[in-house]
Every structure is written in C-alpha cells, then in structure tokens.
Image 1 (cartoon, rainbow, N blue to C red):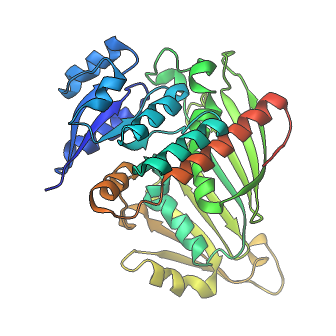
Image 2 (cartoon, helix red, strand yellow; image 1 turned 180 degrees about the horizontal axis):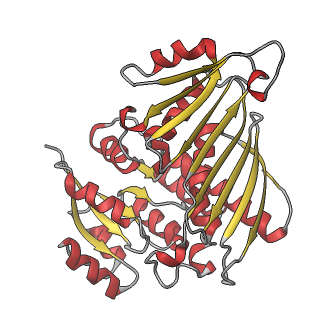
Length: 360
C-alpha cells in the first residue's frame, strides 16, 4: 500500500485539531513529525500526538519520512513555509488564510506550479453536504439566475482557547475579517468566480488591534452581489448560508438538521431526480388571482425541507488532497484557489484600511 508521510508545519491555528486526526486515522497516511515556531508548544503537541518534535523547519524538510506538510502555522509565515516546502519537493496542504498579500500569493503559486508538488487548501465548507447542495441547485438551474447571496459566520472569540498572539495584526493580518470571513470568501469564490469589486466595514468591539465585527459586499463579474458578515463577539449566531435567484432560493443554518429551498412548483420533480433517496417534505403554495396576501404574489411555488443527514457525503479538503497525492484523483481546491482567496481577503483589508470600494 502506498503511504503518505505528513509533517505538521506548525500547531498554532486551532484547526490543527481538524487535520491530525485525519492523517492518523487513514491507513495510507502517517503523521511522522512536527515543527512549531514556539518550542514549548511544539513539544506539548509532540507529546500529545506521540511524534517527534523537530526544532528546525529546514531540517524537517530534509527528513526521508516527510513527503508532505500540513501548514497550520501563523498566517504571516505561510509564504516562507510553503515556498520552502515546494522547493524541497514536499506536497502542501494549508489552513486558510493562504497568504496575507497577493504578491506573496503569486510567489507561492509560481513555486508550487514550478515544483509540481500537489497542493490543497482548507475550503472546509465547500465540502459540507448542505453547502454543496446550494451550489448543486444553482448549477442545475433550479434557482434561475442567481443574483444575490448572504453568508454569515460568527462566534464569541473570548470563549475559544486561542494563541496569545491571535489578535496581533502583524501575525494574523486581521481579526474577524481575515479569519472568520475567509469562509465566506472561499465559498463565494467557489460559487461565483471572478470578483469585480469589494467594500468592507468593521468595528472593534473589544478595542483590540483587529476588527471584531465586519460586513463586506462583493460584486462578482457574473452579476451576483455577495454579502459576507462575520463577528467574533456574538453570543450565538448560527452560520447562515443563503442563495437567491430569479426562480428559487436556498437557505441553510448550520445548527439545523434540515435545510430549505423555495422554488417554482413545476420544478419539484427535478429536485427529486437530483436527490434520489432523500425524503423531501413539500408544501405547495398556489397563487390566487386576487393577490390577497404576499403568498400569492410569486406564482405557484413549493417550499421543500429535507434532512441534512440524508445528503450525499463528501470528503473534507485534506482527504481530497491526500487522494490526489496518493492516487491522482481530482482535487477541486488547488493552488489557484489560494490565489483567489488572497485576492478577496487583501481586497477586503484594503477596503477597511482605505475606507473605500476596491476594484479588482
């Protein structure tokens, strides 16, 4: 059996807990060692995961038992970590954000493409079944011409165990925008493609160096207006995912066991064909000539709810990357995604700093 030997390049980001279990669980991958900028933290993770701690990243890249690196280090050093890995011929999977500037992103992209190593990035929600369904409905034309989307991601950062430098802008590049809004931006990149312009606004609720609440609007070249909201100071704000088109809409909140779409009644059978074996709860609303209520203004339509648990599963980005490295399988979240994500994130940061709309 082929085996992919993976090293952790940093243990800084809290999402490290999402990646090492996958590497340790699979029979065809092995976590062989790790490195971190903080020796104390590195040694703690070394003991926890029962793998060697390597104090020098350059030495880690020389090891025969390292075929690839999983980058979970501080965002401001992603560029150097990935370029060194590519030059050493090591495959790369990285946590978002990709890089802090577009110039850095281009350097990494050029090196990865020149070296031929396989690259993956953590477009996590783009592999979540209920999020995939929104894109599936859109691509099938069941929502008609999509012209607006809204995605919200929020938490109370004060209740999450974070590294002490998590709110240092020099390290992270920002707060609620650069971390939480990365999810909205990669989802919109995945859904809508090339951006035309971005406008962002934020507040610093906690009075720190980085923003705690941010809202951005992105106009895409295909005519979609995307609204992205992020908060690091919310008590409870379920992840919201909404796509609106001329013939239907799709709405999902992540803490719900069901998801909802509304569309023209004549298309219910097409939804059934698209989701064989999924139990659809369909409610028809028929228009009336007198237009006595708002329910009658939109023509005959159907409200469909369905259980999220019955949706087709999908492997997470790190598994798609492992399959690409080991077996040559397709990974839709490659190096160009990293560049696209940084373009949006840098644009938002510039909009916040310059208090104006940024045109791409």
